Length: 222
Image (cartoon, rainbow, N blue to C red):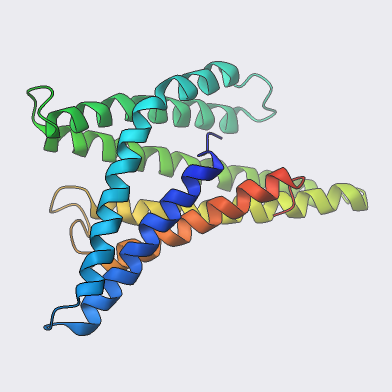
């Protein structure tokens, strides 16, 4: 599935790491002021804005990936194929919606940015749910294949893929918790996460993303 380039994973990790550290310092010092905590939260906010601007250039890369995958005719399982197609569609729609929200905030266009942020966040959440469903389906298939007593080499590859899919689910769940937090009030726990918890969920997801990226570069051993 579509994933961030390694340098952007690092920026994402630093962004959420600063939010985790800053939010923890602010919470610990409450009701006193924590200058370092506030500074780290400010750095996190600026990096978050930087990431939003950088995503202005991701549409074509995502489109190229979606076109390359197409309808997923190479997939053995129809459920995995259509979950992947819908996931790609949600990701593709996410970018222009976020761009409109960003442009509205920057006063480039006249639009209600909050509505567009809500739509983009909902698409992100939908993409995460589809990704979780896809990974669960793949795990189910792998368990069935393992019962057929494959060769030792094949079994090792299957175990590595099981670990990768399990980590992907954990990463998506962490991001989904934050996506719900950023939805309008009244949606589950929307708006109820303290900064440190948002940072913790984002840092966890980012570190898993970095691990999976480098594991894939090493030959798929997660």
